[in-house]
Image 1 (tube, rainbow, N blue to C red):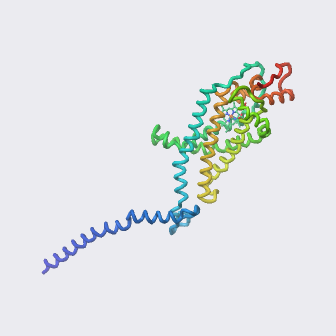
Image 2: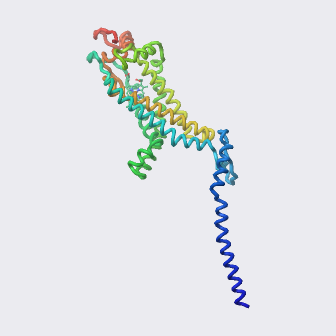
Image 3: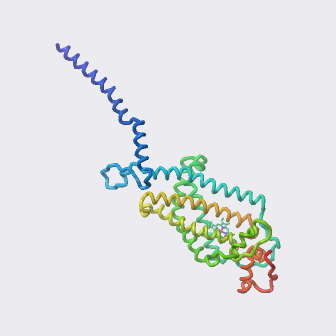
Length: 337
Ligand code: HEM
């Protein structure tokens, strides 16, 4: 009898174990049924899709209510933009500009001062102007490189230097980016205040553009202290710099942006505007160095050759002569062409 009871107990235990073994996977399968869940998630996303503010909230017991967000379709759109569209915009903007510059150099060559050096110079930029230019330029180059690391670093740099070096470099780049933003903003503000008087567009600039700016075609159309192309760059730098400053400010202080959707907006603005400015500045660096003979002196020593100035900024030279900035007794003014 005793043996029979033990046997019944053992059989029951075995049956129970077997039932549990069969039941647990069945239960688990029900909980993580992938098809059913994906369908439900898609339905949720479809329902939320037409309202960019929409989000699916769960219930939480911690004070930070933002942690309750389960789904926000706008977040997926932003990620797709950041990891796809933004990469393409960056590649097209920067590589496209480099290709244009190489083609331009091969076709047009270096813009020379046809009259040769006059041997007399005049001051184009004073010490303070050069300081603010190089302050802005140095910050901009480091900001551009450290910012580009966020967009393309893991595709270009990571495979080259490996994960450890990439991590160290990216941490340093992030600090550099956050701190150099401030002197950059100062530089842009100084440029705006000091140079705005010479950068108001007028008819001279329209005629300068219509004549090809002395870059396309022959001869140099008359120009004031800054020609039409330089004025365009000035406004790209000032307005683009302002857009980068405002958007960057919210990226540094996200709590002030007024919600994650605003933050996504500023992030998109920051990315697109920086590519536009970087492309414009690549063109500017080209023309300020190898693209045009004599141009670098203007920002290097601050002094330019009189014949260079007459060729590229004839109206400015006339004005400087009237003001007595160019000593009398020098070569007579020739027509700019
Ligand atoms: C290596 C980098 C750079 C070089 C070699 C360079 C060179 C020059 C040169 C030679 C000039 C004087 C042009 C003239 O006399 O007519 C100039 C002017 C100027 N630069 Fe730069 N620059 C650089 C970077 C930058 C950056 C990063 C910015 C702004 C973010 C900038 C903004 C300006 C502006 C607004 C002017 C006055 C308008 C103009 O000449 O286009 N530069 N630069």
